[in-house]
Image 1: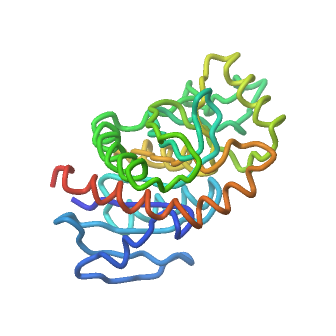
Image 2: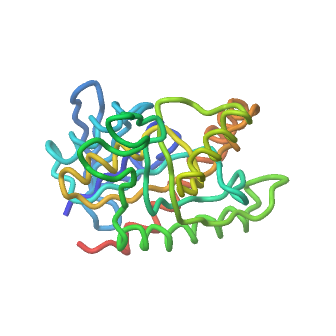
Length: 250
């Protein structure tokens, strides 16, 4: 069974490509795909670039061209939920496109013709990812990789996606308040996950999404994001995926 590991940026995958055995590369649609084995699992690694369209295209290629039968997205996100801090890890239970608005034909956030705003991630795969995330968080806490921060924690819940980098406290508060009013308690915001979940749902391929919180989606988000991706994200991603792969069914 082929496991796809997808991220938007190279730092979000760390040194996984370098660790592949029987490593081969191929190019398609402006993307480079790395295939090989890792911990006895057949894997394909890819970078989508930023945004929902790029992520959906890449997820489709992973399924159609490379035969992926489960997909893991790993990357960073802005924290929205109360108590979700920089350095914490969020594993998605559901995803939602916060910029989807086909009203008044359909309710705001609802995916047209699907009758829902929420797409669920695969529960068994997400459970394994949560367990692997515990190992990554334990490493960060033991090594004090997050200087001057409280110990990192793991959260499981709603991650929202949209084609906008949320980077002001006002925008973050409006987004969270609006979603809460409709019963959607968002923990994190990013730009790809919900598109990946929709592509996987259409193909019937299990997916799980993990995001490490790089900033609080506020006025300092652009500074925190750049520093975190450079200094911390790659270590998180590599350790968590390395912990996940041995636990996956073959």
